[in-house]
Amino acid sequence: MPDKEKIRELFDDIAPQYDSFNHKSSFGADRSWRRKAVMEIADTDRPIEVLDVATGTADFAIEVARKAAPGSHVTGIDISEGMLQAGRDKCKGLPVELMTAQAESLPFTDCTFDRVCVAFGVRNFEDRMKGLSEMYRVVKKGGKLVILELSYPKNRLIRAFYKIYALKILPRIGTGMTGNADAFSYLPASILKFPLPQEFMPMLNRAGFNTVRHSQFMFGVCRMYVAYK
Image (cartoon, rainbow, N blue to C red; front, side, top):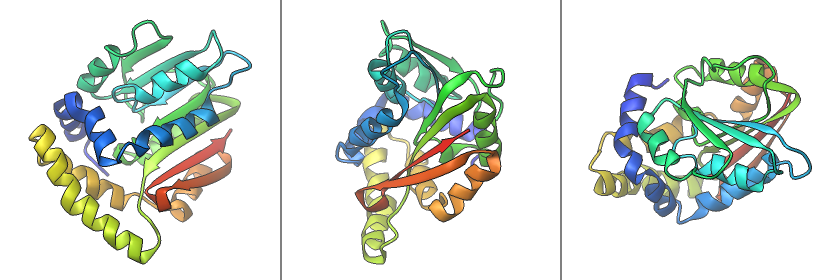
């Protein structure tokens, strides 16, 4: 599992270019993936409380806040103050609150949120099972967890091309944009190490969630998991 302090430093350093890198490296598909996840999260009929874990620069939190019913509120947490500061500049006028916190020790009481979500952050948890268990703890009974995470295609031929892109081309793009070669060595490699659905879905079950379902986008380059308490 990744070291929390190294992850914090990494994201603090690349925060100013993070959004631009995501859009360019996914050819803009990350926006489409987020919109599909927001449809699972934002309740348009009643106000809801939403927790966005590993919110980063708050792109996900902002989209949820814009789509959810009036009176809804989104709390975004992240360990990187640099990422949060970039997010705060975008959240003005929206019912979004950003704060520094760790996924493995969420500073909220049990059953606080109607929805909990994570976009492209679970693979960076220092203790994945602890983070999943904490999200289960703070979501209300009947509530929903939605996770977006980068992954890799199961098809061997497509996966071979994807690995070349992820391990050879992406690091060059990221390093050129930020000057941080270490970050863009770690990030693509972390995608290839993240468990596929047959391993990750049972982890959600062990954390307490039930009725877990999975969708894939772009041949499996991105996966969405939806689970209920």
